[in-house]
Image (cartoon, rainbow over all chains, first blue to last red):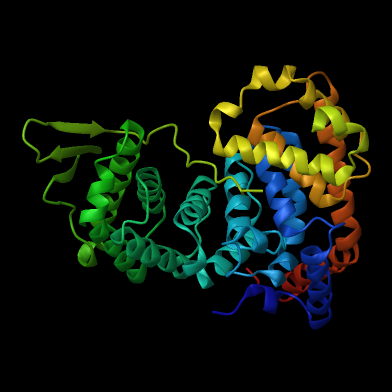
Length: 283
Length: 125
């Protein structure tokens, strides 16, 4: 997959961006990618929307050449983080803040980020991946079939391994189900996610869902089922596990628990409040 | 240490002190007691020093102080907080724009030219 950063700019611009990128990564007197992202996180967390908005505009401007210094392997140790390089956590926090601020950074910015994430999806932590998918969903930006497939395949793989906590899982189910799945490849990857939901480690997480998590997950699962019941449903399947099943009747979701003594729940509209936990950059 | 040595503290010491406080608060949640913090004379000294050094901090120090305030959920007592945060943001934006200025101009020109070319040679309805 070609990076847009390589094709969008002329050779002289690329040279310049490389030079400036180096400045932004190395110099202590210039805000690094990490600094900008941490500041945006801080202003957003403090609910200083005017400050955060101004910084967000700046970040949109500088991100194309911050990406030149993207280092997917960094960020595990504090010493490495202090280098200020553009790392998975930086990009995740940035998109999280944009979503909290309800500020769409523009298609170009989102597409650049989406491609970068898809190329390095293995390097993103579960919380980071959750925040990113949530941000795409909240800002109503469809990342495109190719990127969506890479997200979904990775999410399914990690869900089976039990890497997502309850809140991550419910957020991901709701967010993924909000994207169109018109392409056969994306419907296949959605099927992978649905299959992953029916594994032991995921069901163990479901046990820890609070009411909000349950509502989010159920609504998302219902959407997934409705996608699978669309004219393209041949490569998906109706959702039913050993412990519960979903049905859609007259626009409402009926959730049947197969556990003895429990009944069904009905959901008609999306849950109003849902947002993932802020991922503190760690300083 | 802040209470006794504050006269000798430089920008790095002040930023580090805020950062350590925030790190402690992350480990021990009871540490983040807003009322206690606001009235603690040592925190008030750090607030005053942060405001005093706002023009001298380097970008990393500024970021660390703002980050710490967010983690500690701490606004300075009085108008000092917004004064500090406003100036911190201004300085960061200025510093970043000095570096990216030439690049931004050429990028804008490139985008404008791209639009003109696309418009001139795009499909006609």
